[in-house]
Length: 315
Ligand SMILES: [Zn+2]
Image 1 (cartoon, protein in one colour):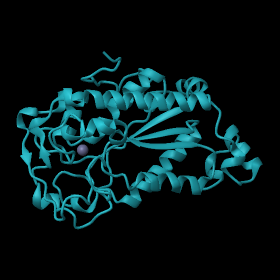
Image 2 (cartoon, rainbow, N blue to C red):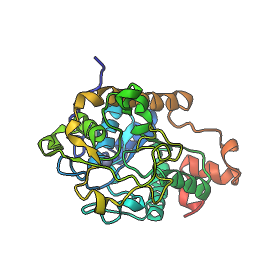
Image 3 (cartoon, rainbow, N blue to C red):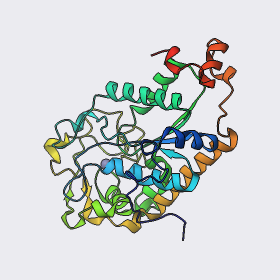
């Protein structure tokens, strides 16, 4: 038995239990920063996931993971970003709220800047949605604009769970490959927020590939092709035409137990990441300034010390 709670329970978002930044006072944060200056930033989406799972699925996948990591490591969690970017083939899918990628990237840049200025200068973006092409852009825009020492890392649970997202023929727990709101994603939902799932309404909806197999990888990058799913246009039909039901795959095959090991691997990894960062750079310490920036040393010293704010460098 692992220490992680599966199925997970929620109820942390409006509670004074030291998990969420937005529920803390400035005094609470000052105390937290003396011990732990890592913040997890869940970035999700509001997206049609069919009749068996809520629109907020990709966000809850993040928050339920982050909450357990915060309990285990005493780091802080930001309230999630609920609206995400979407690839072309999502356009028009009913109920999906689409934010342009440049807007989301810029929004994230200023979220990072705000948390840096608040003293959380070690940030881990936890993404639960297919917007892998946006978050690196945000990280490097922040880096170039502000040029301050910081640690900002991006991880997707897909990349943490690795082989635990594979199909049975590759040693994984699933009968069908991961696409969207399907056997895989619905199993994770049942493991992390079962009270919001309506498994009795789960349906099976076929995918609509438009190219031969062996080229385009699947959602978790665990499939056959060398081309990542988001490095393609014309590889699959639009969801609003081909899968208006909101599911691509077979959600009826979902089972929380299929996701258990992958969820545990993801939680183990995120816990290790937070602890490794703090072991190398204890609270208040940052990667060497002289290796991270050529800005005026006095200006950098003053913003790190909090004598000036980060926006004196750039806005
Ligand atoms: Zn999803």
